[in-house]
View 1 (spheres, rainbow, N blue to C red):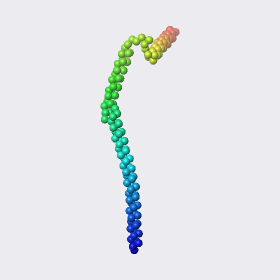
View 2 (view 1 turned 90 degrees about the horizontal axis):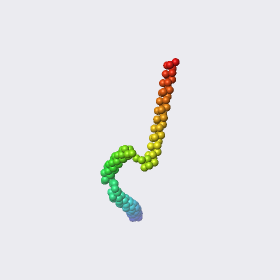
View 3 (view 1 turned 120 degrees about the horizontal axis):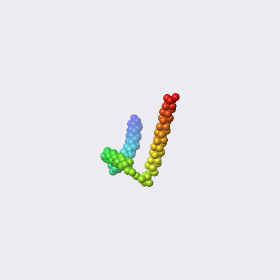
View 4 (view 1 turned 180 degrees about the vertical axis):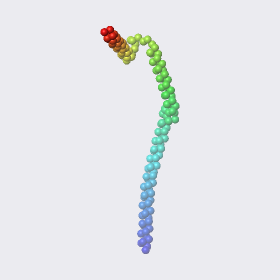
Amino acid sequence: METKVIAEKFQDEYEILKLNQMNARLQMKIDRNNKFIEGLKKELLSSKQSLMQQNPNPMNIHESIRQVKQKLVVYEQSCEKAKINFSNLNVNEVILPKSLMSLVTSLAALREEAVKLKRDADDVLFIKQAVSNMKMIR
């Protein structure tokens, strides 16, 4: 009976040792996870500080967007004024940009073609009227 009690006591001590070992392993995992979480917290804090030092940052992004939109409106108005002023100027062809000169040349060619087509249309109308008059005379 005494051996049975001793065996149970050893068995209980063995179970306690196993539980203590498992507890130590779990505590190591918990400590490792806590270290990892602390590292993530530091990285998050560092990222937040870095983001707040940037311009624009989340606190002033709406103001920056408003300023950019305002600048865009001013630039568009300025561009429109410049276009109007440029179109009102009589600029020598020597100082015109090449792209503008090519557009002016193509515009002149199209105008000449329009005049020619108008002349041809007038000729066709004249011929039709002449033919109709000839038919009436017969």
